[in-house]
Length: 82
Image (cartoon, rainbow, N blue to C red):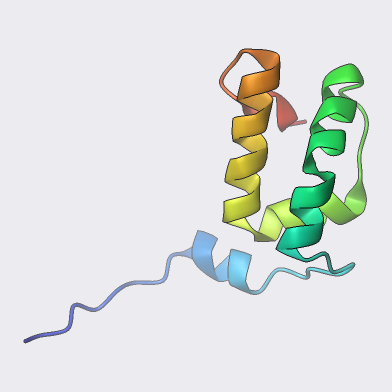
């Protein structure tokens, strides 16, 4: 059986080396996610640096947040950008 080599892309490398301070666990992010999404939908300029930092480094939580946006906004979930 041969092992296939995987190439680490620049995007993956950047994600792995991203400064995640202040630190937030996925459980804590998930607990705050609905409030964060509702606040961003009510005011697109709203920012929470702690959650934003976590979402930039955690694709699982970012995907969950995008799905929640899509559900609440009735769109494609891309309204978080900005």
